[in-house]
Length: 219
Image (cartoon, rainbow, N blue to C red):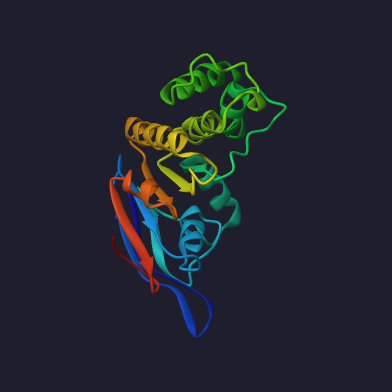
């Protein structure tokens, strides 16, 4: 479970961007956070990812609090426990699809003999079986985003963070990607948090919250 308690962040002392954010996301649940530009969605996502630090409050994943005081420990925590899905796919063009998906395993020094079957299983989970040897340039936008979801989940993270994952996709591809994301998160029993401007994307989640005035509230 992901849990935030009283998380606050200010860049201007007079204007709180995030104020007393409380949130619980159990395993297998996908939560969407909507809000206007500048409402603090990206800042909240960065804090949850350990890329920014709150001014006060606590964040826990499972039984452990984020090790904000130790940069090396925080980087290792992120590598082990977090999967990222971005608006841009960030697939490396000179690697095959399977090699792209297996990158988190390489960073975690998973033995080479385990990487290929795990990458193939992750691709199967997003309906891309048989795409292992292809290069990203031969994929459609929707296929590239599904490969990015496989990469985010191949190391079996506890937490998946998605930042506008359908922002570069047409309606049909966006629907397919959201469907794959939902299925993959539930199969992995991860908790997932997505920030989006799209009402259609937000509606695909299990729970929708709005960030406004520094606070989260039901949409």
